[in-house]
Amino acid sequence: QVQLVESGGGLVQPGGSLRLSCKSSENFFSSVTMDWYRQAPGKQRELVASITSAGTTNYADSVKGRFAISRDNDKKTIYLQLNSLKPEDTAVYLCRSDSPFSWRPGSWGQGTQVTVSS
Image (cartoon, rainbow, N blue to C red):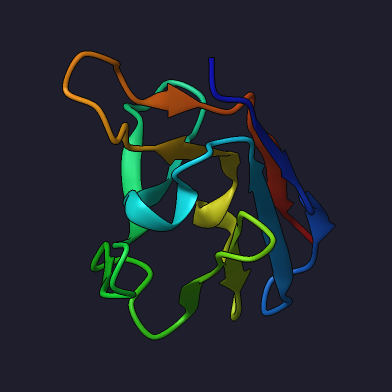
């Protein structure tokens, strides 16, 4: 069972910044795609950003130019830099790890709350 632990959430004013972290226990961390999702109350979970093992990144249109995903394979950690935050960015942010094996499903973290409010 892969453990994913997110941190870095909190309360921030509109226009502010936060940096989220997700530390993985996956032995094959450097080989898997990692994602950040978010879920706001009453809304579906949405993919915010992803980063492949090769470092290729993809973003939801709503966060392009404001958020940046990165990874440190030595630390088995991914990051999500959130800039120019808006109230609509308020959500629980969850980390997800792909599985390196077809027989094992991907893993989710517990999430970290981000609240953007004045």
